[in-house]
Length: 458
Image (tube, rainbow, N blue to C red; front, side):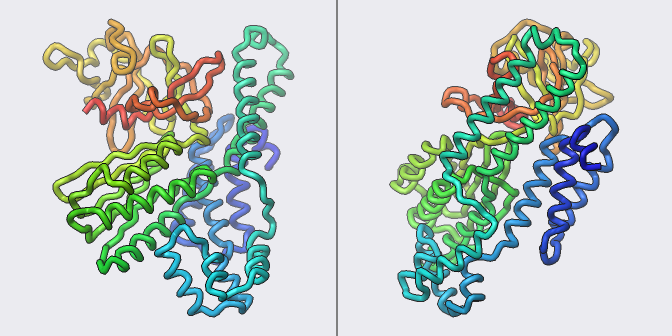
């Protein structure tokens, strides 16, 4: 059965393998979140039709949640030291309190400095913690990721080669398709090796903020609204440092000290959005702490926006992701490739003249089955007007965050898995464009976040 799935529906096989790994592990008890993950997997498999496969974005969502569940079962350093009876519980609590005020210091480092444990105790505990794991230099993983990426691009170029397109040997084509599936799986596996979950880091940031407020003689109500997110391991430390600097600026440098802090984290198509909102006022955007945070952000190719509001202060961080695979709908506009995340596409519609609703002499919406749907002409928005009428274009109806609108393109070319690549500063500044990907003809396709386009249209 596993072999058949791997041949005919490799994404479904990955999903089954991941769920079986969780069920056969020694996890003690399942939470309501785990049950939701099981339900999602069952719904996906239930809707699987013969000859089709599951969307990779949904499969990756389930696999990510399973991985986080399995990793959360690993015992922490403090637990292991207590189990080995080389550390007292009150000493551990004291070390945690100090770590809140000194987040750059590791727990083991604090315990060593205080003489609560020996180096041998730490080595023994760390060895137990990392059993079954292999340490690899991050630079080697980066090189491996780049090599596999080049392999994928080369395969895409071969697909579009006229000599390949003329091949009529069915056995050769089937074997080439199998090679493509193996390459895709290899790429996802290699990329996942560099990713680390972030929720534990945000929990640690909350403890840091609470400890800092206490040291300043204040009370603060902290709320977390987190989506499960991952980031390249080599960027995680720098991001935490940025966030601690921002929290320090909010608590130490606001003219009106905050009594509440809300941290909201959202995973988007090609980036992570982190918002910190407080009821404090009077934060200087040019403060030394914020300037230092922005310098670190530049190294992460991220951005920071500060907004003074009537009810307080809002800081928004945008951290680009460079190791993401999405199911994309391929469209062309004026000869340029665009990629739209398939999970937000409701339908593809060929509008007729009678479907176009005119307001003040300008087309503003499409009427589709008695629904009025706003339109965004992608050519006009990104490349300038092309003179084509709405009914001469193809409408891709987008449904996301309870909003609906239609993107107008010249033509739709199909669906394909693509790797989101980070773009240079010039292209990153275009709202709605969140990344790029190498296409089969060697050109760069621009990956869109439709939600951002709608914001720009207002």
